[in-house]
Length: 183
Image (cartoon, rainbow, N blue to C red; front, side, top):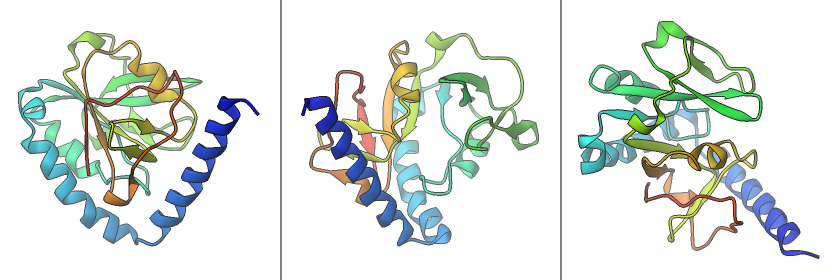
């Protein structure tokens, strides 16, 4: 068995374990657990100094970001990723009223033109299934963020709940390390 098959099996196992852990928390509990995590982000010098930030519109099982996105869109230029086929398009968030259902996961995403000035992005907030103490990230397995991050030089912040931090996550050559992780 080659190493990639091993890595894929290990990732699959971790995804399953984390999914079960997430089910132990109600939506209200996850929202509550999200508050101190986002507060840590707000206190980071890299976030404070950032003029353009790429955030994400959270799914039910991620650190809840909806209110955070709306709050910071009044003070900074907020970019959100939008699933487009196998890649992520970036679009500026201009308010909840301009969100439309995304093509893949039904995640609301901004309507409007693609944000092309990728080099203007100062900080990127990236959810994941699991992270480790070496700042490695493991996503849902579609590699959307890994493909996107190859071309972005912004400061990368992984974000998750405490139970998503592992001693080590399996990584391959496509996986992109975070600059830091908050949980």
